[in-house]
Length: 116
Image 1 (cartoon, rainbow, N blue to C red):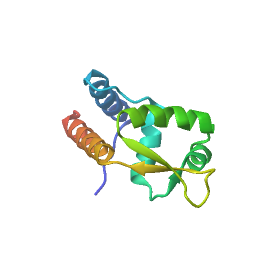
Image 2 (image 1 turned 180 degrees about the horizontal axis):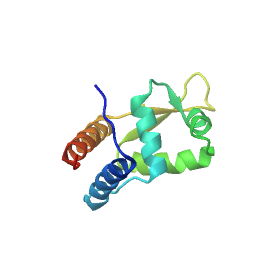
Image 3 (image 1 turned 90 degrees about the vertical axis):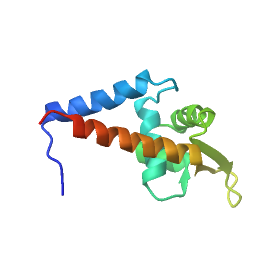
Image 4 (image 1 turned 60 degrees about the horizontal axis):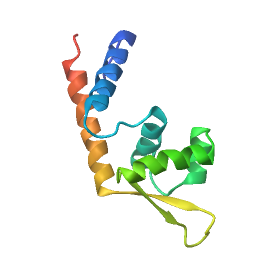
């Protein structure tokens, strides 16, 4: 079972969801931060700063800045890799899992509310 969206509907969905996130009391995430978060939660671990930078085609400092913000929000945590101290492992958190679940619910609700 799939959805077929016209471009205008897809853009309206994206707009409605991001507008809702911006209006919330919490700090909203940038597109880069959201991409890092969803990569960590939707793709199997382990995730490292180096690996995320390579996957997303951005620098390690860009990933670190994104993780700093998400760490303050308790959406992710970081640990030094015990086997290779040069690596930083990105850990999921309960708060992050709940945030991603709520995001999925918001997207679903907004998709259902789209005019057909």
